[in-house]
Image (tube, one colour):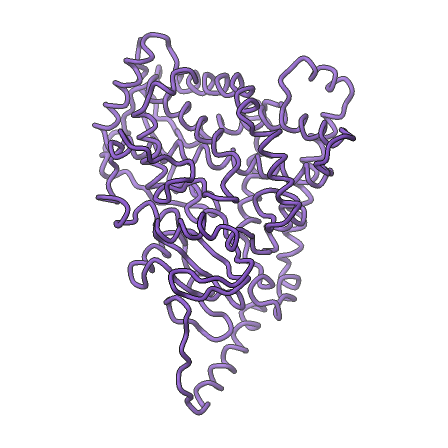
Length: 503
């Protein structure tokens, strides 16, 4: 109620003033087109009623074009929805568009800009990106985590086999999320939580709080003059409570790793990411400048990206396959003829499976896990498509709309993996009609491990089982409704009946 009054009264006064003001000639603008704005709040009222912003922006682009200007309170917003303009923002003018907006929830998550994902473009961010690329996500390091990936996927297949033997329906969304969590825990901090343990529930709660904070609306972000509302309403206090719980979680993990007996044991094992970061902090010869806050912020990045993107991409791919049974049949035939009677798909098999890559690329085109990528912010004034874009403009590149750009893709709304066969187009950020991981300086540093893990999960699910829908449900009736914020999941869980494929 306080928020409503704080916003409504100034709006009424401004509208009253404008209605009685002598009309002046309309100023010539060089801004891109966009929907009408209200005084003071701009388009906040419209976005506040939208459940799926990426779909809403896509619909707006059909009316206003591939570049749209809006206002979120005092913040100018630019939305780009074509491959041509995405290339301008992410590559040609990358430096002008590569910073991040200073949003309260994301700053709290990142320990006031100590991470890679949410930190504005500056020297510290460049150092953190370098640390992440070289020490956490290098090709050698990613390969060192192979046993963990294969172990957890084998465990997932065993779990599904139980349902198959009983002929029971399976919540594949839950199973994929559980497998992803186990992989993240093993890779990032060297632990495995058993299903049903309190630690698993705590981990899931932290994931939920990540999403809540990263997507929270704080009045002070968009209407600084009414920033007191955030404190009076208790939103800041709730955010601080969430962050305190996350900080305690990180600190417990750090304390375990600092335990001398654990460190001695770790010498005989593959280093997890937290081990690597602690060693960097203790290395006096390192120039990384690692602090405990930076370590915690980087843990947040790794957990949020891995535990969100991998299960999302896997379930969207399986949903697309169930809705296209001929594609599923072709993919199963390809995988089973290559792998034979080995009983599982391992990482050595993946380069031999071009149709698998085509299927996943097509799924990422239609259902990118992060459909708006992360918001960017312009550092200087620039020109885009003939329009003047000022500094401190928030920018969304709508990967969902770009993947459906009719000027780039033929039959853009259809699931046709064959379009990627005998094609050099891939999702690594150099083909701007397919940018599920972004591109340029702010490309997702975990792209390679995310894509690899999704490939491995989908390959084993398709190889090991034939999949059926529950009785009474037809493939064309299977929904593709999204839910989420930074990472978008299938709104309704994917419920299937697995039939074990004997080899």
